[in-house]
Image (cartoon, rainbow, N blue to C red; front, side):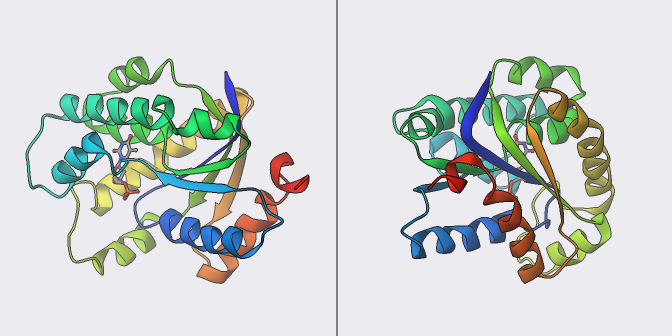
Length: 209
Ligand code: TMP
């Protein structure tokens, strides 16, 4: 199943998905002709998401299989809780999530082996579109270096594997009928924002607003 009006941003750490989603939020708030945008993210800021963030920042230690299951529990709440993704898309809002299922297939595919995240994520619906922020892992790691707290996946070897696995999985997503948009995330913030908008404004919900 595919969820109309549901868009996801994916990419390695440091690829700029969060920055770009913030810019879009401003654009949608400033233009009353555009549909209502619900800009959201995973891990969420709910109780399970906060637990995950603690593990990512090394405040608590969790087995990789536990973390894989927490990402999925957090996603379940994100989608199905009242006023979650499904409620909002059904009410005609545009929902853009910074990360979704593919993050689990990629990251937990590396830390737990491919089978577990596939099994755990099998029943989640597909989004209407996926924007992949394609960045050279070295450039991404230079950006990450400037952060004060480094998370558990933020090192070059891991990010190179992340990039590789996204590239393997994207054609499968496309084959499932998801509109996959490649964004050259090595470019400047403004150029990336322009590229994102060029594609986003063609989605039916934005085009007809
Ligand atoms: P963020 O940097 O986009 O806030 O995401 C936090 C980290 O969590 C990032 O390194 C990707 C990772 N992650 C997973 O490993 N699996 C998942 O399912 C999700 C949503 C994120």
